[in-house]
Image (cartoon, rainbow, N blue to C red):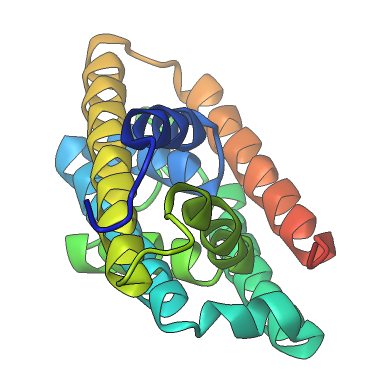
Length: 210
């Protein structure tokens, strides 16, 4: 239907790709652990919205610009890397103002967490290139409506990804509620997470087009 083939394989591959850790997963886990599952779901919704931008852009052919234009790819990846590092700095600057109080990442409004998830995803040009390389493999060459097939597969991929991310948010929030972390350990966890974000930002900045 719609020229789509090997749908079970596509779903399985998409689930495995979504499970792979990255900036999106780190953001969801950090917000879920510090502000509860609703904050993690807010990040998940933002990430899902960012993914849909990539899906629609790829279906319309806009993502082909990132795949073929070195300048466009460079601009987007540097902006994305800078934003990831910006979030990392916020984590690294976590301090324990009250010795008796636990260390926490400053709580954010859900709208801002949504925006963080959206920007983290949409400013990563590797996601756009991924959709152009991965999704067409499951669309027949003679499909009458390739753009529609692309959107359908993209929506399936995004839905599976959001289900996984929501599960990750719920699990992280529940685990965090059950485990009382020593304030000093919590401080270093924030710093380690911030360090991972910096590493991911640098990795994105140094990534190549192909």
